Image 1: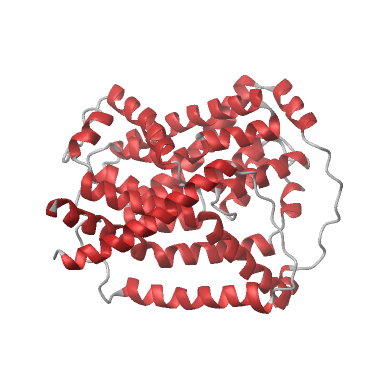
Image 2 (image 1 turned 120 degrees about the vertical axis):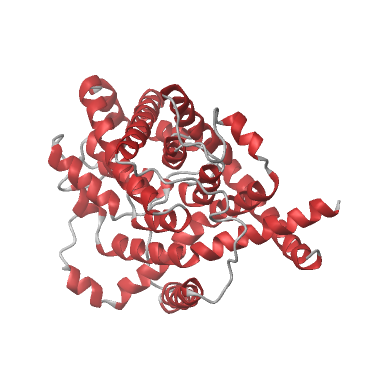
Length: 406
């Protein structure tokens, strides 16, 4: 019993330590994302994304890069862009870029996994887009695309905003909108982040290496060489593991770091990170937007691209001898709360967060601001909310046990 209580304390301490490591990065990423979403409008994006060529794919990728990392926001925006005339391939490029190439995700990955995985994330995001573009050109699903467009209601045309970026930045009203969007970003992810970081701590403290060696075949600490079929199993199981956690990519990064520390291949970990668009909630939302046939086609498209991109990344990094060595103790079992650069960055961004919330919710309370979100499952959201609340109880009791059982 004492062993269990000690490990409970360690699990809670690790979860809070992981979050403390990432707090400033979340705040910085969401601040940048909020500013871009207010100052770069959706209407400006869709105007230049109408053709099927490389230019529209490139623009879709760029606009995704500067957008929110939230899957539900990305799904709603990509649907809206497609509905207003953007090509199907550029809408897919936007969707993939906004969930894999965004700034905040790269910052979080750099903290938990290192620069190699940041490069892998961005190069892999581009590979995902190229693989999807190639598959769309080969399959050429004209009828599916036509039916999907018909299914979407015709939107009323809106006039483009004429204000310049300089004029927008100087308006106090727009900074109130930035504050509101910043609050919305945290509101969208607090449950995922809470559950994800709590699970990461529990996994670090309680789950033995043998479990991962069974789930991901031929793995183990120190394992560096994998044959093709082992890698293929890893990139297929990675999305399954991501599905079972049912949380977004931002909350899954500490788990990805733990998987790598337990000996899972570089390809398997990248597949795990890439998997936030091949889970059931996303499948259901796409079916609501476009119909089940198109939703299943998008699932096939993204899952096939994910497998191809993850394998290409692994062999490419292996060719350049750039795959990092796994270290199980890299993020677990360390001192998280020392007075270092993380401490000062967190204090600074907590202050900035306070300013943003003040501007958005108090000083700008009369400013109207609305951003479309994809429809979430009420049951799933309620379940996730209760799990998050239970996580807070778990963490509170665990921290008390941590200092009692030392």
